[in-house]
Structure formats: structure tokens, C-alpha cells
Image (cartoon, rainbow, N blue to C red; front, side):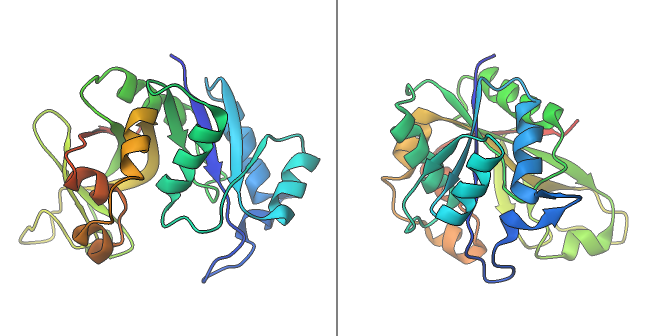
Length: 220
């Protein structure tokens, strides 16, 4: 299995500016994420940022930095720029690990990459965990996913899907770690934002709108 990890890290944030540099037990958050990613089977790990303050910190702990534009509409667009700057082959697999996931297990990163590699008709792979709590199911900050019988995503939503009566909930919460084929990334940036993507504020719906299959798996 061959793949690279890209960790997008933005300094600007409406909720918590400078979040990637927050100190967690003596290290900036972004360093914890980087070290977790380095424990995976990735052949290389890169941090993508448009902010020199983050880049300086990353270089200070020995991380690899790729400077990107500041005007990207989504994290996926930023990942594509990195793949292009690195000259990655269209068949290469890139795993997007969020820069605010300091506890992400290396096994999770390996799992999402392997799942994409093993499903040739998928352009993207991602993960979920099971929801059994009605409050979590109704929470718009918890993105839900419905899958078909083969494990492919049918829809993602902030709404409580699939609808169920009673309190015995059986649903799937999306975990925001992705693996992409570079060919899919290259297509993605050429597509206009889809109405559902804008409405739900979920960029993966742009890919689905244009026919990209997203294979899902329950996180280990």
C-alpha cells in the first residue's frame, strides 16, 4: 500500500484563530497531528498552509511544509494544489487528515487509504462510526451518512438521516478523514460548487453530484 498524507492547517478561523498552534502538553496541536500521521504507513507526510506563522513552527519541529494559496473554497481544493505542486501521479492516493485531530490513530489513516486502494471504482473513501444516541443523531454538527448495500455513500447530511421513530437510533456518523485518488482531485477543482454542497456545507457532496463514488467503512 502506497499513499501520502496531507494535513491542511489554516491560521484564520472564525471560531478559534490560530488553532493549529494551540499548546497541548507542551507541543502545538499541529505537531501532535503530524506525529500521529508519521506513525502510519504513509510514504510521506506534508502540512499544507497559507500562513508563514504555521510554516515556521512546522519547520521548527522538522515537519515538511507545502505553502498553498489562501483563496481555496474548501480543504479538498487545497489538497489538490498540494498534489499538483508535488507532481503526484493521477493514480496516487492522498489521505487528508484534519489539522485539529491530535488523537487520530495511525490505524485509522491506514484503514481509509487501504479501503480506497481495494475499491477500484471509488474515487474517494472515508469512515464512520455508529450512532445510537438520539441527541447525536439530531445534532447538525454531527454529519450523518447513509450507505448502500455495498458500502458506498448515498448521501451525507447534517439533518437526522435516515429518519426513524422512537429513541432506538441506528445511524452512521461521518468521520472527516478522506483518501482521494489524485485523478479525482484534479476533476474536483474543475467543477463548480453544487447546490447541495452549499446548502449542507459539505464539500464531498460536490463530488457525489458529479458521479464520484465514495466508499465508506466503519472505523476500527
